[in-house]
Image 1: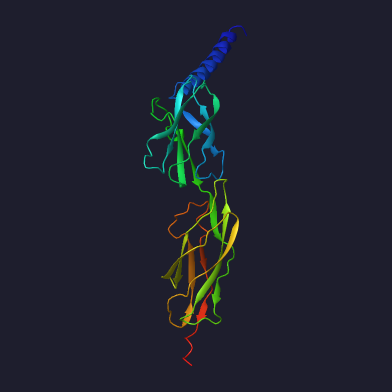
Image 2 (image 1 turned 90 degrees about the vertical axis):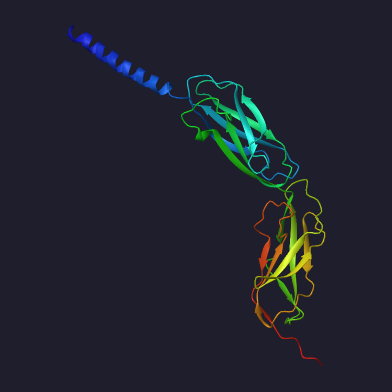
Length: 263
């Protein structure tokens, strides 16, 4: 019994040594930093002049303190995607620390869709076992409102229309998505007949929360028969909108008669 005790102790020591060595192996690997919560914006639908605050969380997967680690934000949609628009440091970044962070970024000079990249250790000062988890992206659309059709119906006149007298009627709404929304003037729209451009016009002045009935001028002559008309508002995307996928309206097939014979 006594003779076997040292062997038992030795076996326990060997197991402990193995575990310690294993832990040591894990902790002597290269450092690794990662995002545990990807960026969330303080304003879900920012206006064209709104600054944004991004919130996210990072973790130090290492036993060494890396307090003072820098992090930056880049606007990948700008003319200078490699120039940081925000830089700060993780003030306290101890071993295995999970740290919530924020970054306040200005409104971009050009509205529309912007993808922001938040990067921890942007200069790659620390060699890591995984450099791919140092970056997290978020896409925001800077717009003051949304143009959309107030009805999915395209009105056609006269009834029945003739090839020299076709006019279309439709409804356009302007819904604000930020307090910066104001009156829009001169917004263009286009009309296609069977996929061929036939008319370009301008919408009336659009105030916030407005519903506007629009009637085209008489469209150019079209051969008698069945035709499909497509109306697109702001076809060149001149107005930054929260949604660009609701600007097209297509008519059902329209039977166009031949013009009436003169008296």
